[in-house]
Amino acid sequence: MQIDKRLLKPNIYSSKIYDEFSFLNEDDQQLISDISDNGEILNPLIITTDNVVISGVRRLSAIQYLSNIQLVPVIISEYHSSDLNEAIVIRYNIQRRKTIAEIAREYETITRFYKLKSGVNPNDPNIILGKKERLELIKSQSNVQSSEKTIQRVLSSKKMRMSLFGESEPEAWENLSKEISKGIEPNTIYTNLKKTIESRANEIKIASTLLLETESIRIINKDSSDLSDEVSDESVDCIPTSPPYFLKVRTYDADLVNEGNSLGEEETMEEFIDNRMKILRECKRMIKDTGSIFINIMDQRKNGRILRVDSKLCDAFEDEGMVLVNRMIWFKNNPLYESNNGFQKSMEYILHFVKDPKKYKWRTDWLDSTSTFLGNITFGDVGTKRKIRDVVSYDFPDENQSAYVSGKLNTNTINNNFLIKILREKGYYLSHNALFPLEVPLICVMSTTDPGDLVLDVWGGLSTTGLIAYANNCRYIGVDQSLEYSAMASVRIKDFIERYSPIERVSG
Image (cartoon, one colour):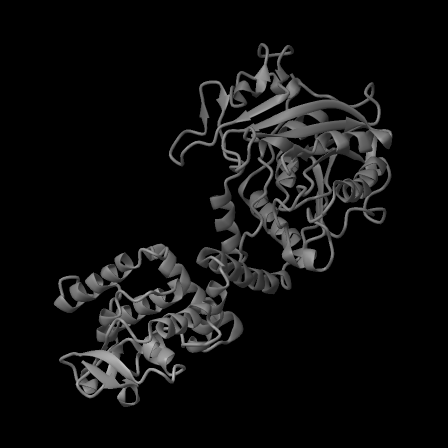
């Protein structure tokens, strides 16, 4: 059956569930072109008994641009327009080609219509029908990544937009649809919005958080390239630190990057080395003749070429008069996967520099124990012969697996879940996951300090080094140019002090 297009009207629900038809939209342009080439609509529209379109609103919109098409094929359903509701419209549009935003809106609409909330009677026929229709909706869209998890993230993104930007629900859906149409993945949209919310919450907490300052521990928020007002010459015993990675491996603080501070955002190796050396020269000024500087650095690959970041940093620091006396390999069983034609990068270096290889302090008495918790990080007999290996090997066990097993060090880089919980209790969100493993500063501090010595971290971050310094009766200064990280480091160390007492170091 065919009917004059002027007699047809769209239903009142489609515009609330689906994206508006637009000649600017590429898919809508293609639909107009296809109908024009065919000279007609091939698939009939489904309409009510009073000429309201249930399924085919998009096709009806398309032919308004085509003056040569007046008659439209239709199938008349048993419904009158007064009988329509959201569920019926979705049911008749189940096979329609949709974006993930439209699928999420359908999912939300079904949830609302059937009142599918927690606590309802699961045996209620209405609830059973609603859950069935949601499942059929997800299964119907094979051309779109429409898992329930992805749909929930889209719905959460809509709510976050409304909260963050004060958008109405239709505005939030419209802006989400625009982002998705540009090819931005739903998970990326969700993650970015979540980070924005967390960052705003952190900003509020920063205003009321005092940076930690006691007789033995100080957290300083500033650029470490000039600490002359904070730390005197040749006063520091140990500097274990981890500079931001090259090639934008991680964004450490988006606000700092926007302000022009290059936290791993450098475009060239020369710029990266120059920026690190500004701070490492300051480290040389502050370190004692008997002191040690440990630099955790990861090499990188670009355009298939190994860059030798560690070697170039070594050369630059040695040109300043420092001496490389140890190079330890930190091995990781579960590194970040790389898609390239090369071996999987699985290690980082810990570079040990001193001013004079004959004067620097070196301690081994802390290894004189029957304890085997260091596993294969140590070599030799228990006692004076025992040494730290220059390869640190980590396993990353399942959550329920013991942290230490038969002679091999097995541990996570840090217990992030525990740290996340601590910070959330204080009103902070953890946004920095590139954390030192506890064992790296532990090895550095225990091997080169005595109780009461001063430990400094010039890229302090969340001050994992500070925990080790406090635990081993050392003084500590942590410096970071991010106020957010400095505030969270203060909260973290305060919590650690409340929970634990320093260990007792007994020589021999």
